[in-house]
Amino acid sequence: MTARRSDATRAAILVAARERFAADGFERATIRAIAADARIDPSMVMRYYGNKEALFAAAADFDLRLPDLGDTPPDRIGAALVRHFLHRWEHDETLMALLRTAVTKEAAAERMRSVFAQQVGPVAARLAPDPAQAATRAGLIATQMLGFALCRYILRLPPVVGLTPEEAVAWLAPTVQRYLTGEVS
Amino acid sequence: MTARRSDATRAAILVAARERFAADGFERATIRAIAADARIDPSMVMRYYGNKEALFAAAADFDLRLPDLGDTPPDRIGAALVRHFLHRWEHDETLMALLRTAVTKEAAAERMRSVFAQQVGPVAARLAPDPAQAATRAGLIATQMLGFALCRYILRLPPVVGLTPEEAVAWLAPTVQRYLTGEVS
DNA sequence: CTCGTTTGCCAACAACTGTTGGCAACCATA
DNA sequence: TATGGTTGCCAACAGTTGTTGGCAAACGAG
Image (tube, each protein chain N blue to C red):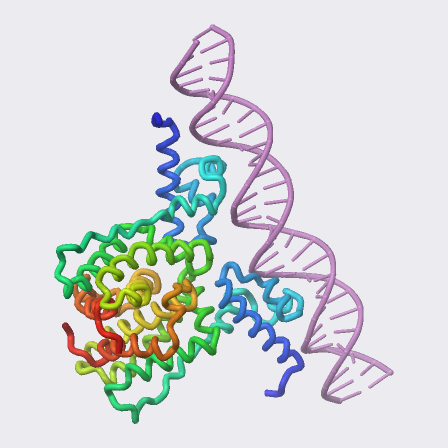
């Protein structure tokens, strides 16, 4: 596949779309605003991505990129996971775009579900004492990590915004660790 | 103040507005749809509530109604809080309307912040080992409770939806308890 | 150079949005 | 019964939205 001359435009649209979706959510991010950011005509967005939903699907294509964790001591996996989540969240606005949209668009919610099922699920499956609980444990981890992101990056609750990354890890790691490997109460 | 003849209409509008805001979020919930649900003309909504933002403010007026907890053993407060949150969430769509909107509307986010600061804050202030940490502890509780609500009621992650209320309490109570009274790691 | 394709912009459409003003029916009070 | 405010609906406005079709310039293969 040879590089097309319009690849730069396509990429610029994608970058602008991610920014707008992350900052405003799906409905408030308009094609016109995205096109203006990318310095092209709104009709180009339609030509290259079909429609707004497809553009979002392309812009919100996301991978958690969980590290292997194979050589991490089992009792430190919680901290490693929290640290990784935090890092991903701070350096990639795709997650923010996805969450802001998932709250009101079923298609985005479905993608969020699959991200956690396919990427956190396996980690839980490998480490949970009882494999039958793996999905539940992955779900519980999702509640804590997504809740933290919601409060810190979206709602911007002052006490949560004020935590340093290491303080956040110190507080959340035991929770995630317990959800992953702890006994059922 | 004598009861006006239009009070029933006002109330019907508010009920319909809460339902729509909870189900669709602020932008997708249209005045026309709300009016249709309430079986009145869209212009009535404007006459009685001024504009859409004011209508939302009226519909999303929310109180967590945290119980006194004065006679609850300190080590059971976590469970009591989780149980109460769950109950509130299942029986009042106002919280859902608020959360769905807070993700994209700053005014709603601000209300969410004040709900937690003014209603969860005092509980933490009374029970936290170090009063200086009260706000942080309240914030951490918010991350877990809002994250759980997000995953269960909005994103509908299957493993989280599948938990019975008592299972949810069993899993989350230790987390909330630690955030409230546990030592800093 | 020539010609078909690609890239881009402009203008417009149709649908939907929040919002407004006017008009008819109703009601309580005098 | 007359009057002034209340309740409700209809029609319309102005702005914004996603989306489309056509046209001009630039490009690349022959």
